[in-house]
Image 1 (cartoon, rainbow, N blue to C red):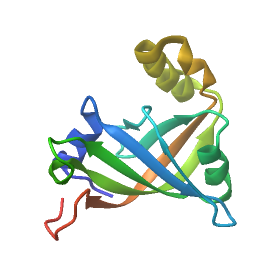
Image 2 (cartoon, rainbow, N blue to C red; image 1 turned 90 degrees about the horizontal axis):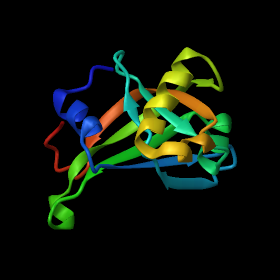
Image 3 (cartoon, rainbow, N blue to C red; image 1 turned 30 degrees about the vertical axis):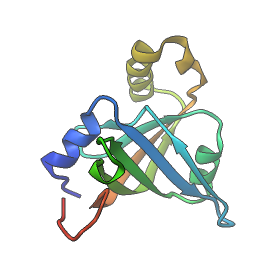
Image 4 (cartoon, one colour; image 1 turned 90 degrees about the vertical axis):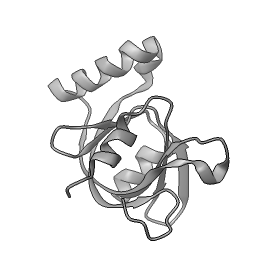
Length: 136
């Protein structure tokens, strides 16, 4: 899917929140904040996970949704987008895994050692964070 320059800027913005929602095969949901979202050159999203509920859900159900939020002075002034995602691949080693983990480790130090899985997502749909029909 072709994503707009506006969405690309949201995904590169400092101070953004990425809230990922997942659901397992039984429908049990989970939502969690992730700082490891990276927009790849091919328009996919790369996210690193530890051994957590979100990752377990994705192994059962590849569909997810993410709020990318840049906070405004009031709640209704927030900027951002909603990404509807589908997991394409899972990696536990290799050059891309090492590269993404190294970028995260440069930001957060040894806390990155909990990250064990790299998931590549395709963007299925994009909507504004506050949707009044304006598109994005």
